[in-house]
Amino acid sequence: MYSQKMMDHFSNPRNVGEIPDADGIGSEGNPVCGDMMKIFIKVEDGKITDAKFKTFGCGAAIAVSSMITEMAKGKTIDEALSITKESVAEALDGLPAQKQHCSNLGADALHKAIADYKSKHSA
Image 1 (cartoon, one colour):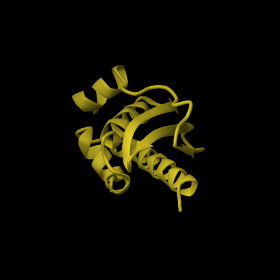
Image 2 (cartoon, rainbow, N blue to C red; image 1 turned 30 degrees about the vertical axis):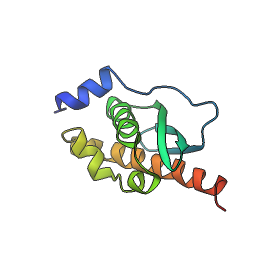
Image 3 (cartoon, rainbow, N blue to C red; image 1 turned 90 degrees about the vertical axis):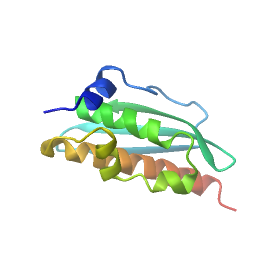
Image 4 (cartoon, one colour; image 1 turned 45 degrees about the vertical axis):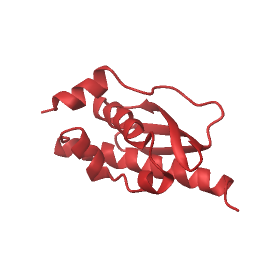
Protein backbone atom coordinates (compact mmCIF):
# COMPACT_ATOMS: atom_id res chain seq x y z
CA MET A 1 0.00 0.00 0.00
CA TYR A 2 2.73 2.50 0.96
CA SER A 3 6.13 2.70 -0.73
CA GLN A 4 9.38 2.23 1.18
CA LYS A 5 10.27 5.86 0.49
CA MET A 6 6.94 7.08 1.86
CA MET A 7 7.36 4.94 4.97
CA ASP A 8 10.92 6.25 5.44
CA HIS A 9 9.76 9.89 5.31
CA PHE A 10 6.95 9.06 7.75
CA SER A 11 9.17 7.13 10.19
CA ASN A 12 12.14 9.52 9.87
CA PRO A 13 10.69 12.87 8.82
CA ARG A 14 13.21 15.48 7.73
CA ASN A 15 13.02 19.19 8.58
CA VAL A 16 10.44 19.02 11.38
CA GLY A 17 9.99 22.27 13.26
CA GLU A 18 9.64 25.98 12.77
CA ILE A 19 11.95 28.68 11.45
CA PRO A 20 11.44 31.52 13.96
CA ASP A 21 12.50 34.24 11.50
CA ALA A 22 11.01 32.58 8.39
CA ASP A 23 10.87 34.62 5.21
CA GLY A 24 7.64 32.89 4.19
CA ILE A 25 5.01 30.80 5.94
CA GLY A 26 2.24 28.86 4.24
CA SER A 27 -0.60 26.93 5.86
CA GLU A 28 -3.00 24.51 4.24
CA GLY A 29 -5.57 22.16 5.67
CA ASN A 30 -8.35 19.81 4.77
CA PRO A 31 -11.29 20.00 7.17
CA VAL A 32 -12.68 16.70 5.85
CA CYS A 33 -9.68 14.58 6.87
CA GLY A 34 -8.27 16.89 9.54
CA ASP A 35 -4.76 17.24 8.05
CA MET A 36 -3.06 20.59 8.68
CA MET A 37 0.34 21.59 7.27
CA LYS A 38 2.46 24.63 7.92
CA ILE A 39 5.58 25.18 5.79
CA PHE A 40 8.32 27.66 6.75
CA ILE A 41 10.95 28.84 4.26
CA LYS A 42 14.15 30.84 4.56
CA VAL A 43 15.31 32.59 1.37
CA GLU A 44 18.73 34.06 0.57
CA ASP A 45 19.67 35.52 -2.82
CA GLY A 46 16.50 34.13 -4.38
CA LYS A 47 17.14 30.54 -3.20
CA ILE A 48 15.38 28.57 -0.50
CA THR A 49 18.17 27.86 1.96
CA ASP A 50 16.01 26.17 4.58
CA ALA A 51 12.52 24.70 4.82
CA LYS A 52 10.78 23.21 7.82
CA PHE A 53 7.28 21.98 8.56
CA LYS A 54 4.78 21.36 11.29
CA THR A 55 2.04 18.93 10.32
CA PHE A 56 -0.91 17.49 12.15
CA GLY A 57 -2.23 14.58 10.19
CA CYS A 58 -1.87 11.05 8.92
CA GLY A 59 1.36 9.30 7.99
CA ALA A 60 1.02 10.31 4.33
CA ALA A 61 0.62 13.99 5.30
CA ILE A 62 3.79 13.82 7.40
CA ALA A 63 5.72 12.04 4.62
CA VAL A 64 4.53 14.61 2.05
CA SER A 65 5.60 17.49 4.33
CA SER A 66 9.02 15.92 4.83
CA MET A 67 9.51 15.30 1.11
CA ILE A 68 8.32 18.74 0.02
CA THR A 69 10.78 20.49 2.34
CA GLU A 70 13.58 18.29 0.98
CA MET A 71 12.53 19.08 -2.60
CA ALA A 72 12.35 22.85 -1.97
CA LYS A 73 15.73 23.31 -0.27
CA GLY A 74 18.38 24.66 -2.62
CA LYS A 75 15.88 25.63 -5.31
CA THR A 76 15.21 29.13 -6.57
CA ILE A 77 11.77 30.55 -5.88
CA ASP A 78 10.69 29.84 -9.47
CA GLU A 79 12.02 26.27 -9.34
CA ALA A 80 10.17 25.67 -6.06
CA LEU A 81 6.96 27.00 -7.60
CA SER A 82 7.21 24.25 -10.19
CA ILE A 83 6.91 21.58 -7.46
CA THR A 84 3.48 20.06 -7.98
CA LYS A 85 1.29 17.57 -6.17
CA GLU A 86 2.23 15.06 -8.88
CA SER A 87 5.98 15.62 -8.46
CA VAL A 88 5.71 15.16 -4.68
CA ALA A 89 3.74 11.92 -5.05
CA GLU A 90 6.25 10.72 -7.67
CA ALA A 91 9.20 11.57 -5.38
CA LEU A 92 7.60 9.36 -2.71
CA ASP A 93 7.23 6.53 -5.28
CA GLY A 94 3.48 7.04 -5.34
CA LEU A 95 0.66 7.52 -2.85
CA PRO A 96 -2.48 5.41 -2.50
CA ALA A 97 -5.47 7.00 -4.26
CA GLN A 98 -7.20 7.82 -0.99
CA LYS A 99 -4.08 9.73 0.17
CA GLN A 100 -3.51 11.82 -2.98
CA HIS A 101 -5.11 14.83 -1.28
CA CYS A 102 -2.14 14.90 1.11
CA SER A 103 0.24 15.76 -1.72
CA ASN A 104 -2.13 18.54 -2.78
CA LEU A 105 -1.88 20.05 0.70
CA GLY A 106 1.92 19.97 0.67
CA ALA A 107 2.28 21.65 -2.71
CA ASP A 108 -0.37 24.23 -1.80
CA ALA A 109 1.30 25.02 1.56
CA LEU A 110 4.69 25.47 -0.15
CA HIS A 111 3.18 27.75 -2.80
CA LYS A 112 1.49 29.80 -0.05
CA ALA A 113 4.82 30.14 1.79
CA ILE A 114 6.40 31.42 -1.43
CA ALA A 115 3.49 33.84 -1.98
CA ASP A 116 3.97 35.08 1.61
CA TYR A 117 7.68 35.60 0.93
CA LYS A 118 6.95 37.46 -2.31
CA SER A 119 4.37 39.70 -0.61
CA LYS A 120 6.98 40.74 1.97
CA HIS A 121 9.81 41.24 -0.52
CA SER A 122 8.20 42.80 -3.56
CA ALA A 123 9.86 45.97 -4.71
